[in-house]
Length: 298
Image (cartoon, rainbow, N blue to C red; front, side, top):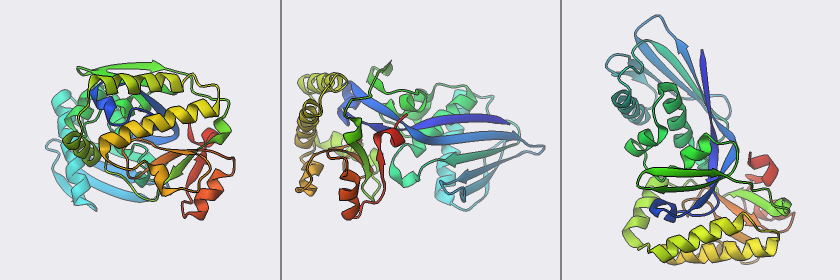
């Protein structure tokens, strides 16, 4: 048996503009996804995926030589997985030529947007001994910050230019971390669609890239919650203007603090910066899934 594990992620800064070379802060989470590989004595590949409750949510059996789908409970997902495995074979022709049973287990609900796809891609890439960024590019796309978080056990400052990733481990453990909370919006955001919509409506000049990069670097150096909050508000204003969308704080006019979207706007988790009873505030708004800084981040 062989084991692989990848961290989940959230994007603290640089959403969307990280695609154009801006420096962004990626935060690996304590929750991730594992993948185990067992040898078999036949010519079949059995794939079994467990959710956060350790229950099977997806299973599929392939013929190993052709990757033909023989049986599955989710045909659409099986087809997508088949496509990924075929691309892996293109990158490594020696991959998956004998019978295997593969089991994946998520530590988080796949609807939370913490990287069910990126953790899978990184785990498969480790297993197949291929470049995870090459596999990401040929499958889901994106900047690659999520892959960097998957394989780093500390916060990172990430940028990508001309398909070259620059990953710098950084310290992000602010004195005011007890005032930082991660709140789930009760809806999942499709990152691929969100990116496409953004690319169709926004023009990104070098000044915006430079400004967002500067904010990312300054966020790492903040010694006070007031300074941090001001930078967050400036960042939200920039992305709001690009997206032609109101910042999320507009939905919570009575919240005594600051709110920032994390990653694609419109769903998944957001960051709340405010009083130590902030999670109670959002629970009263129907948002019952929330985490403190120390419970959420590596």
